[in-house]
Every structure is written in structure tokens, then in C-alpha cells.
Amino acid sequence: MRSGEVGRGMPPVARFITASGMTNLGDGVAVLAWSWTASLLTRDPLLIALTAVALRMPWVLFSLPAGIVADRMDRRVLIVRMDVLRALAFAAVAAALWSAMPLAPPPRDGVSAPWAYAALLVAAAVVGMAEVFRDNAAQTMLPSLVPDARLESANGRLWSVEMIGNSLAGPPLGALLVAASLPLPFAFNVGAYALAAVIVGGMAPAAPPARKANDWRAELAEGIAFLRGSPLLMLLAWVTGLWNLLFQMLSIALVLHVQDNLRLPSSVYGLVLGAGAVGGIAGALAGERVVRAIGPARAAQWSLLATAPACAAVALSPDAWRLGLTLAFFEAAGMVWNTVAVTGRQRIVPNGLLGRVNSAYRLLALGMMPVVLLLSGLVVRALEVVVARETALTAPFWIAAAGVALLTVASWRRLGDALSRPLLPATQTQAEPAP
Image (cartoon, rainbow, N blue to C red; front, side, top):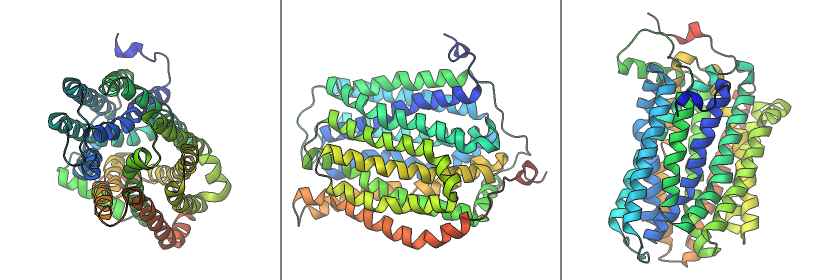
């Protein structure tokens, strides 16, 4: 089948969103598969956290190069290549797990199948690297597919489709595949990413804006200078970065909390994550209306404020139903924040600089994740010495709640002041470097 035959007749933005839905379905399957597979190889919280570190460390290493590449080449081609690379990485880890079956019981210290665990880490690192390049290219490509006035609506549609795949359909499907056979979710993702590559490959080429070729250092410095020169973008980047840092501390502790404290099987854990997705979809679809109703400043402030009690409620939820409702509330608030932060960035950054500015922004917003993922595992391991394991596993939730509360207080006034001013689109003539 030729790439042009998949999605024939669909508008470019519809093809783009469909492909993103496929990749995010794969991401959703992998969200459960990475952590659950690691937990079947070891019960050491630090070693489990290393899987998430391998996925997120590329944001530190490759965010800035990804921006330069996105502004230099056809973003469509870049997206296709990264989806193919992810498909190959999932094929490799599926083969490694298949050869290690059946697995021995996971030890409290160390791993039961070292080669399978090593393959899991390597594949996670490759997938994470490809995700950095792919996501940056996709986020910078969207504004070229829709008029400026429809950015909030297009982002809402995109995020709702992504949430359906990433958190609603993906985790329950991943749970079913894990229950059937551990390598199956990774094999499924080979097909998901390959199909997404075919869909995007059928789109018309979208060359980057014409501009004078510069040394990569000069190009990078130009993007960083634009970001540093915008107080609003810097504020949003730092708040998003700290918020993500605390959220990742919560999420990495969740899998062991669900297994050891709530005694839930993988199938129920997938449904819990799916409940969170329902809230995220609602927040994505309602984000534009919320922003128009109360303004971007209030929308950002209140969505940030809502996440502090949600973090605490995760620790206090005694069963799957209440944990699912808590995650739904949490995800809804996060999508409203994204409506303000992402569309604001897309609107004020010129197309010719968007890849580099976006990569520098995302380095600040996501680059601290590997540190806190390790910290989450270390906190649990250290507290197990002085308190019961059940109590230690909830500590990251309370730390996240306190951290988000402090972040809200520290940024409340500045968010109100910065987002109360009109967000004016930057013109292309302002964007391009001098010849």
C-alpha cells in the first residue's frame, strides 16, 4: 500500500491529527508497558525509575538539536523518520522479551533477567530520543496547517485525540496485551508507529521557511535569544518545568503504589489511567471555552491551583474509583494550562524560529524530569529504612502536593500580570534573521 492511499482525501490537518492519534495510542500502550514490565523484572523502585529516566533523559540531551533540525528540514519528513525509528526500537525490545520468557519472579534487589532489562533501557532511550525530534517537529508544524484564529480549536482537537490514545484507550489496551503476553504491547507498537509514518508520509511536503543558512551555533543562539527576550515565555517555561518535575515524581511512584498499597491488577490500573484520560479529553475540548470565558490569566492560575489538592488526593484515594476520579480532575486542569501555554507560544513565536524557540522552551519545561524521576525512587528507598513500605510509597505524592502549592503561590501574581496583556502574533518579517 502506498502512503498516499492511507487517508486519501483527508484535509492535511485531519491527516496530521489522525497520525498523532496513532502514535499516542502507541504511547498509551507503552505508558503501562514500560513501567509494568520493569516491575516484573525488579521490585527495586530505583531500578524501575531508571526506565522512566531512559525515556526522559533525551529531553536534556536532544531538545536543542531537535529545534535546529526542525527549522532546517521538511518537518513532515522528520516526523516520518522518527516514527519509523520508534517502530524499530519497539520491535527490538519485543524480541528481547520474547527470548527471556518465562520470567523468573522479580527480586527485591537486582533484576531477574539482566539482558531483557538492558534491552528495555536501550529501547526506552531510543524511543525517548525519537520522541524529542518528532514532538518538536509536530508542534511547530501545526500552526502552518490552520489559521491563527483556530489555533486553540486545533490544539484542543489534537490534544483530545492524543488523550484518547495516550491515556483512555492505550493503557487499558496495554494492560490486556501485558496480561496476554509481555512482549505483545511492544509488538503492537511496531504497527502503530509504522501506520502513523505512512499517514504523515502521504501529506504534501512542507519545506521550512526560506532563510539564510547560518552556523548551528548562531541559529541556536537566535532561538535562545528570542526566548530569553520574552518574559511571558520564560515564565511559562519555568512554571511548566517545575510543574512537570513534580508530576513526574508522582507518576513514577504511582505504579508501585497501585500494586503494593491498593493491590490492583494491571487491567484495573489501565482503567484508572483511562479515567484520567476522560478528564484530560474534557479539559482539552473545553480549554478554548474556558480561556475565552475567564481569560488566559485566570485560566492558567486556577488550573495550576487545582493540581495541588489533586496530588494530595492521589495519596488519600483508597480505591480505584476515587483514584480514577482524582486523576481525571488532575488531567482536566493540566489540559486547560496547556491551552494557554502552548497556543500562546505558537501564536507569538515566528514560524522561522518556532522549532528552535520551542526546543529551548521544552528543555526548560521537560529537561529536569530525569533528575526528579531518580529522586522519586531514592526518596522511596530512603524512607523504607525508617517507615513502612506502604507509607514510603505515598511520600512522592505529598512532596508533589507541597511543591505545586508553593509554585502556585510564587507564580500567581506574575501569571496574572503577564497573561492579562494581549498576545500579539509575531509577523514573518519580524521572525526571519537578517540576510
